[in-house]
Image (cartoon, rainbow, N blue to C red; front, side, top):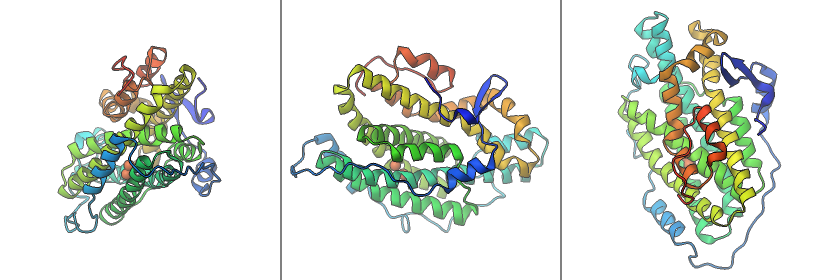
Length: 350
Ligand SMILES: [Fe+2]
Ligand SMILES: [Fe+2]
């Protein structure tokens, strides 16, 4: 299976890492802001409900709307002098502690890491907004179109809430990592509704749930906790849209189509997983005297880091893929070797 971003892969000890050191390549990816993408518009003349479970999800989406302006207490302080998330859950905070830096520096580094992580979620929310808009055109049934339309307003709210929290409470919106930009561009550009559904609704929505859940569990700030709880509730519904829709796809997919989806899902998640640690260290390390080249291998070898990074995937996305029959014996060893968990069931339906 050909790996994505081959030209940016480097070996650190035993680990193959997607690592961008060429600033021109980074700027080229970030500067790519308009795309001509194929979009098949699908009319329907059936205005009644045809897919009951998606109609139910649409109803749930309607009753669970909330207002980012008024439903969160924006007066809650968020300070660089506090542990906003528990110290053991931050890579940068722990590295500064290991290097003997004082607690104020550890807290500042943890604060920067939170801004960095939430910034990546913010950029992902923008991609979700745009991709879900595409789904309103491309989906076949009105139930899917209506659900996707309700998700579009959810994603607009998530952009609003993360931009406000990161920009106003944490102070810095970090740029998107080149790897995430590359992967999101791929999702926005693929031409089939099945791949968009799999890539965004199952993979990225599932990862978002995993990241938000682990951040919420470790949060020590009531505004962050409540914001994540509300967004996560929406994202769980979005991931359910992916699973319910993909169940219908896998029911009729030919074996070669299943294999192609399985390989594509693996290649996207493996690429993301291989890039996370290196991108954080390159972006945040220098201001704390941390040279990424010296620390990438030790960080990747650290069991605590391995556990935290693996949990993002094993929380929702990998079990969902496994239940859909998109992690089989053929690829199970690859998932395990990449630190992404692996197959949990031989059942085909989630
Ligand atoms: Fe979202
Ligand atoms: Fe979402």
